[in-house]
Length: 236
Image (cartoon, rainbow, N blue to C red; front, side):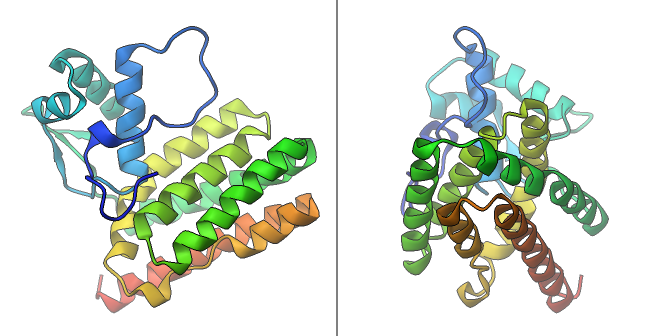
């Protein structure tokens, strides 16, 4: 896991948890997944420029798969491409942010509910173990570790829903949203961090599908309220 003191470079990132593709993933796909993780985990903030050679050096590979992955990410709007062929993390508007969060609210609670209905004992054990680790990271105020554990918990949970197309939409929404959301929360006082896992942990302990959906919905609503309040405080 990545901690606050870890080096924040794409070369140190895990690959994004996903439905396993058939066969061995290409080098371009592996680079793309690591860059997606960098976006979701807040390692790249809005406006950051991505330099192909720097990423290739960090990952100890040639520039060709890196450039191919950057082009693919720009095609999905995860990155912005300038007329001079420079790649940047896009800056999203508050209107876009609200729309993305509304889409998450429509999809993620259903994924959580269906996951709880389908999970076996090993799945519950795995997710509850992640909840405990997340609680420990939260109590230590280890922002990077907590963020990665939250990502891992939700992805693991949503995979159990057995809805791969919904899962793809959610991960794309996270890629679009999290550079902005992570940067906003990281710059804010720690006492405003939302405790986003307690109700989900209880729902999983009780194997209550409806409560799991409510927990995800509540966390999304709370996160949006905090984000909007921060924008108001910053005069944006």
